[in-house]
Image (cartoon, rainbow, N blue to C red; front, side):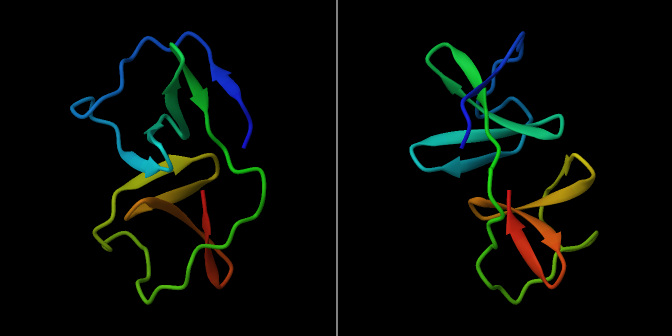
Length: 96
């Protein structure tokens, strides 16, 4: 993981902010405008996975009507699935 600061972030994330949130270890990540960040020492850190991480196997197929919240992420869509964000990649899903 990188420690990149999200500059000039005026929005305060929280339970009622309207953005999708995902538990991530000891903190909560907020999915916001195609990227992910969390509050850290008075600012927001960007969170991106630096490696190709394959999600656990699951029988569920993500798609337009799967019932999971979607989040635009660069050139694709991530699906919020439990405490994870999954992105379709070939015959599997990647953790994002």
